[in-house]
Image (tube, rainbow, N blue to C red):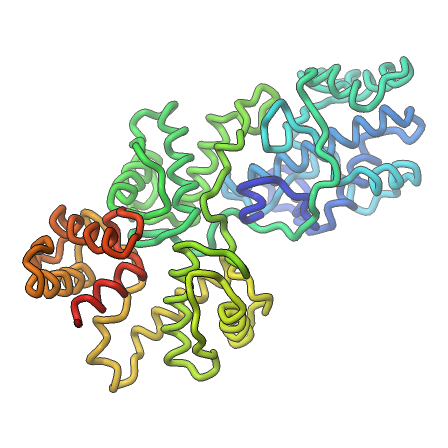
Length: 450
């Protein structure tokens, strides 16, 4: 569920149910979330129970389901589904069963409500059992009947089992589910909120696994420090050591994060606001502003310059109507939803096409290829041709102005290079990070060419 998955929960439109044990080669079905809740409620509950008992149980069923989906409990273990159909793992789902009218009516009314614990963000793991044949920590289904007969409200019943600090989130947003994995591997040079999320999760995992490196500062730049940490992580957990965060590494990190935070446990550490907050979010849209919008402008204007199907329009630091027109034209050309919103799918396609443009420049543009941003953020410790080109531009600036820090052309982004970059950032009133993104690259090239 994309930024909604990583941030505030949503009610998914659909859920994937595995009809059997997790490791069985069983049928998997994708059904609407509301129909799934109706089926489970009719399989787990008796329609003759008091209304308050039914409502408290349906809220528990819904919250349990959302906890599984929100935490990607099964995908983090390598499975392709959201939940199983069996009560010894999850909840009882019976394909094709008959449903009860009064339960259908209640689910229609409250399917987008769920339980949270204290000031936690995630849907609470509302563990439950029938209370007769099986006993467990959490809610007793038959016990809810007795409490309802005593006049307890659904919320009072839930508090009886889960504590007075629980509350009910009502009328949550309903939207299509999206996985948290960004769709393509993350690697050195990437700039993304997904990078910030991974660093935050690794820092929490470090508490339980001290061999995992800890980050002093958490930012959205995939630098050499993160690459080395990922290599260490991959080595410890027997993953291919690439230094990139592919799908397997992403979900291994998520699995361990879920485990140490006990997000699928009645005694959860929980997710707080600071655990999910994002500086820029995972979408860019009209009226947004900031460095990520400036970066978007650079990428799409380079593409538009070499592609007549996309209008080459003037832009500033704000996602304005011209930005939207270019984005919509791009989305239409590449078969994406033409909504003018740059989500992760559009951004991945933008980067893909940007690199294709760099690889297939027309002959008349080849002599200026080095002036075009290489597409990756450059920072301390990185090596390669892109760093060499950067240092050549910085050296040209030094030759014109001896007050500017001198940079050696060695192909390794060292502290001298970082100092020179910070000087550029200071001059153009940018954040003095010492890292080179598209805006820094643009200013450096222009200053070197003067």
